[in-house]
Image: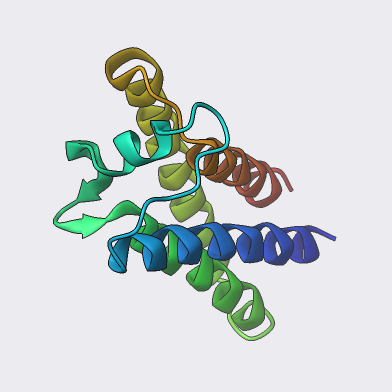
Length: 129
């Protein structure tokens, strides 16, 4: 059950990350569903990159690694610890980025909020045994 939930949430995260990443790579505006332009203001802010890499591509790699981790669990149980650490860090970083949206930028990105909820779900699924 936990494995299926992890894969489903990761696929949703991949879909969001790909939409944002491809749209931004094409230099197009993201369709904002909350306030019209908030997503683009968030995605164009100085907090949209970590270590020079766009956050959506980091998220994409994270979600892919979780799927690979779930598949590899059948052979290597030690991967569980790495997945728990990764989900904890991703959830913590989501909290920080959500705070930045609300308190600093005062613009809101529904895709970012959805990613944060996905990361919360993954954190719960992977941490709680």
